[in-house]
Length: 164
Image (cartoon, rainbow, N blue to C red; front, top):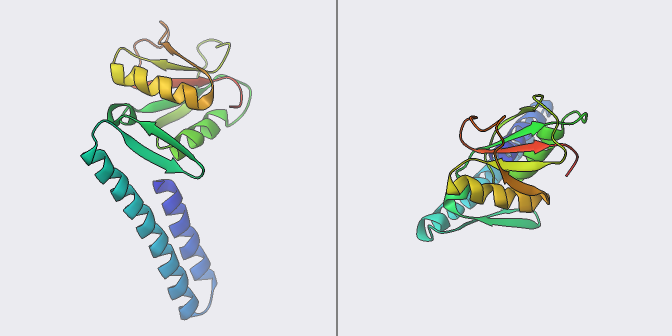
């Protein structure tokens, strides 16, 4: 959501700089500021809801919504591409971020071949919960980490092999 708000802000500033009239610039800046303020207000409302109900928070993006516990929502997510499809990890990361997940890294997984897209979790209950929720969202399975990634830093690891 932050990235979307920033994109709107910079697009508005870009359009304003292209126009020659101060009144257009003021209108564009006001519209952009209103969009950023609306996004911040929605985030504050979501945070307040999370504070009053510590067991769940709700994030809405477009027509879909995902309900996750506060612990699961705080788990970092890494998305790694294990296919020949360029940008697949980035596409999947964008999908997860639009649902409120914090993607800390995207890249490639080249230490072997994974047969199907899978969400891997470590030993913590929050990681397992987050992995289960992400797997359900992507329509794939969640499994404990295998030896090749067992000692990776904390968080959920999504290894994608085909478009989701």
